[in-house]
Length: 169
Image (cartoon, rainbow, N blue to C red; front, side, top):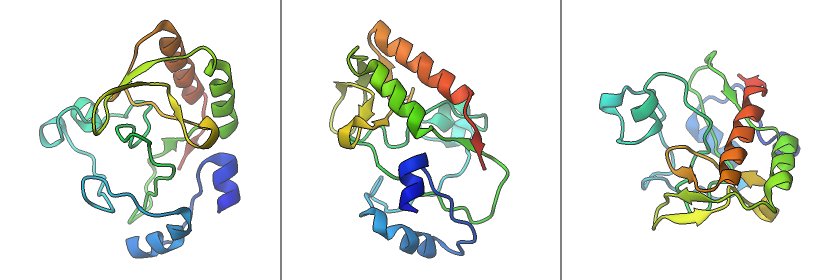
């Protein structure tokens, strides 16, 4: 599991029967950080009228969501996010390739792309990377706005990377 996480940034485990089993399998990754006071969340597609104001569901409803990093509004986004599906679905997701991510960070690290980022505890100006040795990228159009041209170029390159990425199901 750890090798796949390190190399690909994700790991898929099939035939997990319950949320409790999923949490037991992933406890070696570290402690669970609560979101909105809960250790687990139920993600369910919603239309604009029944969703939280300014959430991705509010803006996109049942359509495809844009490129985004979950928990961008935290001061340090989650290193791992665990998804448990009660039943297998055909809907896929696009995940970043760690090598491509590293190349983009290397290209922009000295150019200083600056974003205005809304986060819990107050808004900040920040770079779009985080993690040990700045190895992960965060971006969410609901919470981050590019401030300078370099940041706009960074977003364009990030979006282009995902357009050419493989969909994981």
